[in-house]
Structures are given as C-alpha cells and as structure tokens.
Length: 563
Image (cartoon, rainbow, N blue to C red; front, side, top):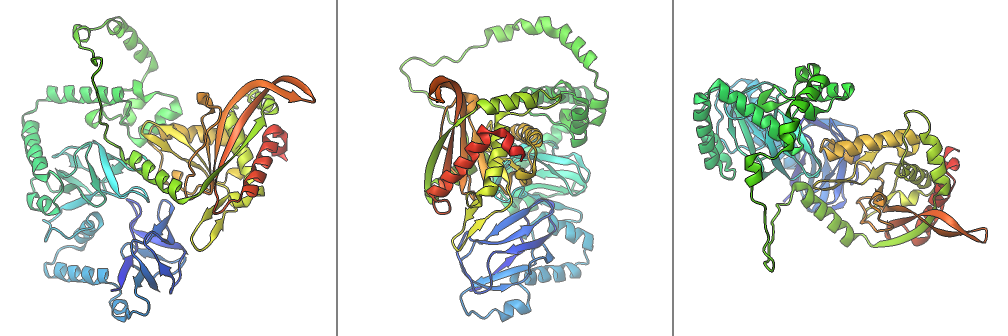
C-alpha cells in the first residue's frame, strides 16, 4: 500500500519548507534511511530521510518550491501501484485535515483558535479542546532529535504566559536550547517534569484561560506519570495561594543562588548581549526576574564596585567553614567493597554513542601518520601574535592549512552515498570541542576563505558557546572535514573516528621538543604528529598520503599559506 510523505516540521518555528534538492527521482528504489531530499527551513538546510522502503512513485513539491508543513511531499509504494486516488485527494493527511475542518465549521469555532491548536499539537487524541486552550508538544529542535529532556522549567503552573516568554530549557542531542511560547494565556498543565525525557510531539504543556479544566486533555495524551503530575500541580496551586510575599522573595533568591552554583545562567537574550558588550560576568549579577532570571535592567544597573565591596564584606565568613559544613560527613568507601555509581545517559551521550558506532562499523577506516617540523610555524605564530589584539593558536594554523590542502585534494573533502560519491568543492571544517556531556563539532563555514585571525576568533566564539550549551543546530551542520586536537592535553598522537558523513578526520597531537637531524647534524627541534583517518570507500591510500604531504608543506612553511 502506498505511503504518503508530507512536508516535515524540522524546526520549532517552521511553518513552511522549501525543497532545495531532490536526491531521489520518480522510479528510484528507496530504502529506509535513504536521504530523499534537502529541505530548507527558516533556520537551516537539512537532509530529510525516508522512514519507509519502496519505490518513489510521485514527487509533490519540486526543487525550489515552497509549501506549508504537512503538504504532500512524495508518495512511496510498490512499483507500478495505482496512486490516482491519493493524488485526487492530494493525500491521506489532507483528507483527515478536511474532515477536521468540516467538523470545526459545524461547531462554528473561530479559525484563529483552530490554527493555534493545529500549530501546537500534532495529534488528535483530544476529541475537542475547550475554547482558547492550546496544547504545546515537545518540539523538534534539531534535525536528528528524536527525544528531548526538560533541563529547567522557567514557568510554573498558574503563571501568566505572554507570547515570546521562555517556557523551558530543553536538552536535545546537540545542545540545551531555550523554548519560547508562541501563545499567551495561563500555564495550566506541565506534562514533562524537569529531568524527564520524552519523544518529540509528546505533551509538554497546556496553555489556556485561567481556571480551565484540562484533565481530560492531559489524560488523552497519556504522558508518563501524568496523574502524578496533575496531583503535584494541584498541590502547587494550593501552596501558591497561601504563599506570602516574603516567602516568594526568599524562594527567588534561593533559586538564583542555586543557578549560579550549578554553572547554568538564567538570563534573557538581551541581558546576555548587553553583558557581553559591557564585559560583565553574569555570574556576578543577581537576577530580579522570574525565578531569579537576569533581565536587561539587572545588567544595566550592575556595578562592579558594589560587587567587590559585597565580596569583601563576606570574605571572612566565607573563608571559614560553617558549623554545618564542619560536621558534614565525608563519603568513605570501605576497602575491599565493590562500589558502583549509575549515571543516566544524556541525550547528547546517546547520540554520540549511536553516531560513532555507525561510523566505525559502516565506514572502513584506515590511518595515515606524518611527522611535521614545527619550528617555522612557532616562529610565524610568535610574529603574528606580536600584532596588537591578535591571538592565533597552533590549532588555527592547522585548520587554515587543512582548508587549503582540501582545495588541492577535493577527494578527501568528500562524502559516500550508495549510488554516488559527493565531492565538495566548498570547505566547511568541523572543530571537535569537548564539553561536559561529551563532544560537539561546531562548523566553520567556508573555512578556505577565512584569514587566520578570523579562524581564531570564530573557533574561540564557537568553543565558548559549545561549552555553555548555547550553540544553535545550524552551527553544527554541514561539515565536510573535521579536525580534532588533543595536543593541549599532552597527547603526542592518537586516532579518531570519522565524523559522518565526512570521509576523513585529522587528529592533531602535541608539539614535542626532541633531537632531530638537520643537514646531517643532530639538533634540538620541535615536531608534531598528525594522523588522518580515512574512509576507504572514498579516499584511497595514495590520495590521503598526497593530502598529508601538502598539509605538511603548508605547516612547515606557513608563509606559503599567504600565497
């Protein structure tokens, strides 16, 4: 039986998509996991894969055309299958949508409310929503996201919500991102508690007029522990009604202190921007917003002098342990006993495990190593960094040299597909960055066109935001080659697993001072080991070796990179 594929929702704010490229044509055999097309959203151009197998029977949206979410994108079925009925009705999904609209017209519900419901709920489990009530589901915040974890709720049941308010911080497989509300009203129900994980499109929250009974709606969605959640929310409402003004203030201060202690900073985007411009450390700023959130006025009124005075006044008491601290028991592990600790895997950790396993077991890896003399590079870097306000690292030199070498050896800058090898003539280098939960790879777009100082500034910015989990999904997509550097940890040489869909990854070791032979004499020199992991399906041994030779020439004679 033929299956209708509709325009997917690939970002939380996406309302329509544009087909940038079809990678399959009518009549092609499709396997589950094949990339059907590249779809341009409001944030990035993403690959869209098939979840079904069969033959591509029909394409509903041509390259360059735009269409709303859920429009007929394609039809997959058995070769020669009659799909005329599906084409007449446009798609099964649209027929269902028409039935909903007819039912809605009979009830004479306002169009604006219908649109709000359709925008925020991808399921029809609730037979009828009360007037003004909107169901908010777990958004898909990255192209590879299948589950999301609620890191922090910034609103609680009973709070007034305005359009644009940040509801929660959601941890995806790539980053922790703020999720804002597209609707106004009162937060009536929370379906996923802090720390809990749920699939995309699960019931996240319900927003509507204050006092509306939404127990039937939440029950129909069947989220885990929904009854317990409702009970907690009821208790929360009772506590809220009896809470005094002083208790609220104390609660806010406690949350603010805990936020700073955990390293996570709750601040509005505008407050962060102003703080960055003024060079203010947000850890020093006390938030006056909801739950200790730092807002614009807090940053504008912040005075470093006052902060220093406050710090000095408490330094004496802070330096000495409190009675409770002095009496706090230390964890003692008895000798000879087996002690284990179970740590829940984050979404990022799960995806890293999945992607690297797929890469290692599907791509036939082989490794090439080369030793590079770094004396000239060290001298050149010293001269460059003598220029005011300029800071270039050895890693920046490696990235620049790699980008230029890839232009001369485009086969290394490639990607394997079952039917063809894609050779990229643009260079987007991914830079592996270690973060608390694992590893992320922010991407420098068109690296070959960047200067050394631009590369240095971009890497510093991306790495900083990666460690704070503030990277956007679009900043981690589209790499054609990857550089991983462990030299700063004293690792002399190592091998890496290829970051799919790249065909190669470069492992950079530490610079080592050791005896070397120059002009027949043993002298002290500085060398660095580079290891290239290649996918043998796309990069032959000779091709990889030639790439490393070119890279070595650039690194040993940095002036040639200016040519």
